[in-house]
Amino acid sequence: MKVTAVKTKLIEANKYTLTKVLSESIDNLEENSIVAISSKIVSLCEGNVLPLTDLSKDQLIENEADQFIPKEYSKYGVYLTIKNGLLVPSAGIDESNTNGYFVMWPKDPQKTANNCWEFLKEKFGLNNLGVIITDSTTSPLKWGVTGKTISHCGFMSINSNIGDKDLFNKTLRQTRINVADGLAASAVLCMGESVEQTPIAIIEDVPFVVFQNHVPSIDELKSLRIEIKDDLYAPLLERAPWTD
Image (tube, rainbow, N blue to C red; front, side):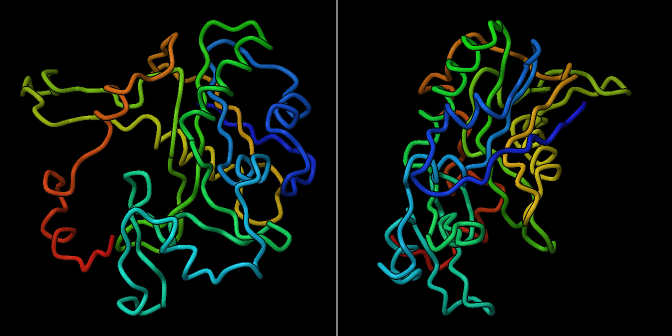
């Protein structure tokens, strides 16, 4: 797998459209590539931002989160939240590299991924192309952030090995590979977290990716999410003091 971070102009809120940024930043795309786009530049381009002076971050987090654990439960005063079916701190709200704004997640990240996929396929005349919208988040019991995919288009997000045989002919019963998050982790690592100014990455040489020539269906997207009651970590999550 090859990951190439793409330098862009300095992106500020409400100054550029996302398609303009993609057009000016990406010179060429090959078949069977994945384009990773930071959720922050999506929101900056789409204007899903709020001046730091308009509302407290606490109130904004509570407004944006689907569910949250009040920050008083955190040693660090941080809200743990569920947003769009994902467990993330602070409902994904960020204020770094924003020039005076709170930046929320895109209002409809799946629609954005679909639109970028269609735009880039047409622009570069491609048959097989993937798009992921990424963000960085923490992992329980580990320091540091890694990339996650918050929406994808153009490929199967999960590869199932259920029913396959292992090296000793044992049938695999539970093994699923989260392709989208694996790609996001690699892309975000190369894109960086501070002053790199590379919020786009192109991922090539991905023989494990199964491309699709359609946007994800509702059923496909639903199949990617696990209800808390069915999650492996349900014993922890169900006992958390969630607020809706």
